[in-house]
Image 1 (cartoon, helix red, strand yellow):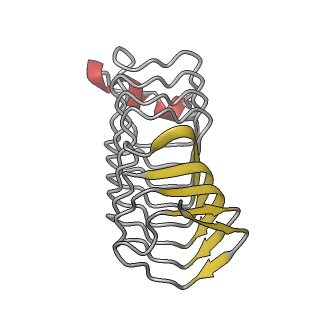
Image 2 (cartoon, helix red, strand yellow):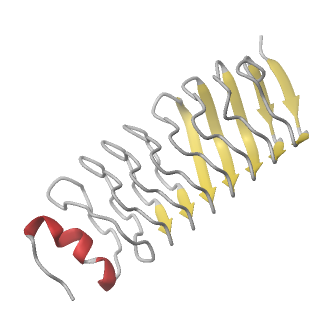
Length: 189
């Protein structure tokens, strides 16, 4: 039976490789915590918030994220693909997510606000109704993704092949059109 914590505040903690394993957190807030050494096993976060935390290179293969908010966090090169898919819901604001992977996940309704998503892997991901608000999507990969009703209007540096990505009713700005046409070598000025 995992150790259970409800409605607690955690601040300025550097977690070791196994410190967080076999624990369940509900309605908890983590501030200025460092998870970069963690190798998560059987960890659940429900209605939790992470503020100014470092997850760079952490191994989150066995984590349940159920309505979790990341604010101003470093989450570089993290593989979310093996997270528990039951009630999976995450939101990001002012985060660095470069080189992270969301391969095959259902991210329906996820919000990415003012975040860097350079070279992020969204291949085969369900991005239905995802909000990409003011995000840098340089070299992000969207092949075989479902991005129906996704909002890219204020984001930039993306290249998406409409023949390999479902984009029905997705929203783009006029400035972002060149990211949809680059495959055709069309110059938009």
